[in-house]
Length: 249
Image (cartoon, rainbow, N blue to C red):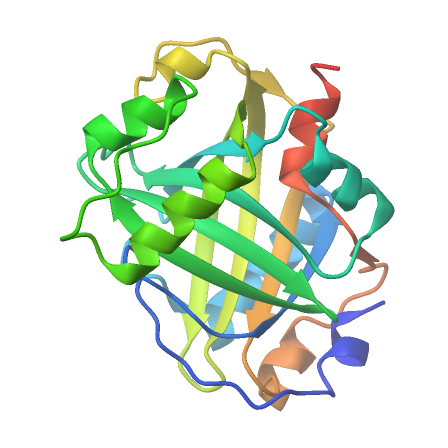
């Protein structure tokens, strides 16, 4: 399924966007596994019609590190493999080695759309979750944080794998479009070292490949859809969590 095919349909949504705060909106999200040649072509096209994400480092990228959770039966992994709808997964995430800004996210997929619920975590709360515990829910926590922490505990979720990758992000305000190129995706089971950069990482993609992600709220602007139209660009149900877990089965 190509970008031009999926971009025709839309769903009315409300936008409330923050990189570190709570984000609640239904969005289209499509992923494509691309080779180095396709990446080179699409990067040039993206630079012509999109803006750089303001959070990038000097080289136009930022680093994402996530810790994914599952239960003792690997329910999230099984739902991912079966394509269960709806389904959800939890992860802790931080950017560019900045462990002072840590986020707990719940990502929900339903009927081809995605939504995130999120809250900030202290480093101490993160350590508790990393070691299989659950932070004490306090009265002064936000309702969203209480909800997410409660669900983690009720579902018996605990950390399974670390996913790290480099992202080249582009944005466009009309339609709240994000086009990202995710490179150097690695997995690790050194959970205790999640907040450090001192652990073994294993690449999960063939050399020279990356994941293109295209996200938008309602209808993708026509000029962006046209820019992303190239031969052999086919949709894939790619999951970083699944790809990283399968190396440690």
